[in-house]
Image (cartoon, rainbow, N blue to C red; front, top):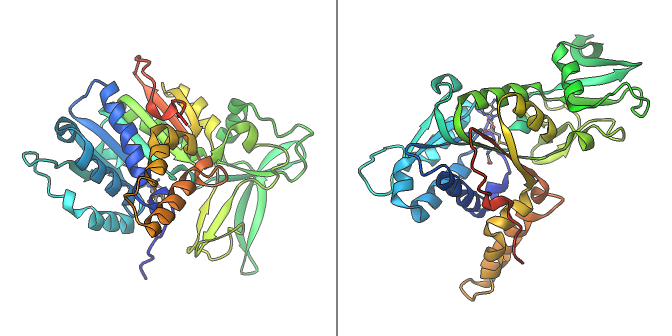
Length: 348
Ligand SMILES: C[S@@+](CC[C@H](N)C(=O)[O-])C[C@H]1O[C@@H](n2cnc3c(N)ncnc32)[C@H](O)[C@@H]1O
């Protein structure tokens, strides 16, 4: 059976998210000095909607020299999703640099990309939360790990010694000490070590430019609050959220929030410098979402269009939903201090 993977993300609400992100990515090209080639590497492209919105936006709005420079690379783990993405983006697949408005689009794996070869931006939306995490638990004064075994034909949790010293180093690096009394016995949380390996890989491929990470998550302080004693693991099955990772085995999406402090601190080890962290709502407002809301009263739209679009735009900035997602931008080998539009204080 082929599982059709369906995600609801900011791009599911229409083209605004991709178009506003496109404004930011174009500004990055200018700040980098309009390099040719200019690489945009989308990691974890879902059903390809974000790529489609970005490419459409660039084709209608970007300068010809930007389109000529643009090399769009997708890195996607799921072969099933690669097929969906290629189907959706097939009009961009027949690259012909001589034709007006065409861009170079390809699917690659990490091994296809040479070290320090990318000048441009690596970006992802809701990728890092999808990585597998280590479940850890406080037992006495010790950090233990949660494993799974089958006993009497049933999946059973086993608490044992941690599988990697990297888990201990992680808590030391982010300055969290679970042995402290304020953390109750049985305190359970997650550690996304794969996110750190991923960041190291991305940093190693970047010659000069940006890494833009959008996801739901917290700072380390908030993530590892003593009161958050069951961690952040969440499961999605048929668009319903619950917290039992052992239900619907193989059919449900399991995610954990992102610790943005860890990305920042480990990024420094990999020569990355954080230039901004904000919430998606503020980021999109700074990039022009407010103007789009104002435009709805210009008389150009029908009433049903206004309701639908207004609802979508509001969802993108809703602080308890998509608008509260974190937007982290790190740079490598960039000395220029030009500020990014997405971090400007929006005019109201
Ligand atoms: C929730 S979807 C996000 C989709 C898309 N970015 C969007 O905004 O609609 C997560 C995506 O990340 C991909 N993914 C998960 N782990 C990955 C990995 N290690 N490398 C590349 N892609 C990965 C999934 O297959 C899926 O396409």
